[in-house]
Image 1 (cartoon, rainbow over the protein chains, first blue to last red):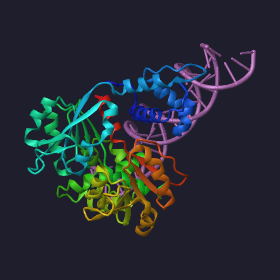
Image 2: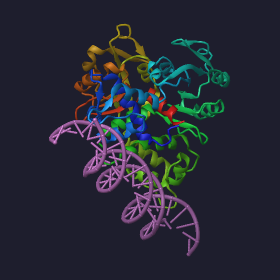
Image 3: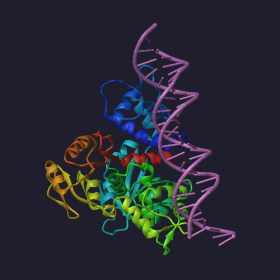
Image 4: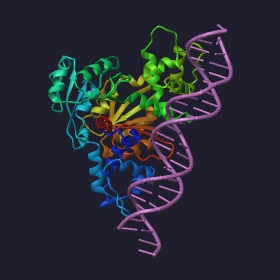
Length: 203
Length: 203
DNA sequence: TAGATTGTTAATCGATTAACAATC
DNA sequence: TAGATTGTTAATCGATTAACAATC
């Protein structure tokens, strides 16, 4: 969709958005310099990043706060409703089912899938845990194009294959394995344990 | 500790390690080219990354699998036992308390802290949820230098301030805010919702 | 030996930063 | 007007890739 923006820039846009949404100091305008200082970045970088969106700065005053938020939300697709499903209703999967933060980005996490008989049929935060064996029908019915993999590493690739088959386009993968997906599909990985290990190596 | 390695390289080391640990095909040796193909990377990059560790390749045959794993584990500090605590015993915090993946990196998640009276005194996977008001004593007693912040965004900075004060050196932060910490302390951020939003922007 | 592989030096590429003209 | 700010072009920096000598 946004093929021209570097991923590094794209990754910073939610940071700007979060900052802007939580830092209203009453002023209608905010400059790239003020954002840069608050987030400890270069101000040119901020302007470059913001230039990928439809945001228009005004010389002398900066960006209109409200417009900038709207431009970021628009660029990040926060106004498009998208359904996401979770695969694996363990601790992490259930935590994500009830996490409220996705709605800021227009994402509804609508269901989880699992193959544990004891979990199937239950609800978490009003969202159903469904039978993994019926995942394809479920995903199709829900129109989900986004999925989050929260199963143990050894099952992750087969879950990914299934998801790809069911019409999911993008996968957020918490399992510590590299998933192979066909051209045109997208995966992002979050390895929590590795992140903590990296952190501890750095200090 | 490892101030000379680029963070980009450091971030790939756990990927190599996971791959090596799960891909034993019986062969005693593995080449950088084989790793590169499996992980879809350049082979020179793999060799450069591995060269930061104590791994020694052998011309003609590649790296001895076992030695390479050992070198990566050593470099990443998997053999040093480190205690970590979780701040915030909500869904995510509890999921991390019972997540087994940290032990691969020598990290023991030993306790969580919360200020909810109903949670204090309970256990999750045999690990205690303790009173946030006693966090400093607890962290000192446990000798934890690593912490994971799983509280709502508006509390994250004050929790970080507390942690810094209690002797924590490194923080993994799941709250979507930029934490300010003094020089010499390290923070890594994981914003799950933003990751899903980025993913959906990419497709 | 010929071929496969490492490890290193040089070249390229991409992202960040610096410089600066334009604007109000 | 002078000063502050944007947006863009040029320079720098760092990471990745290409080239290649050394090795067995």
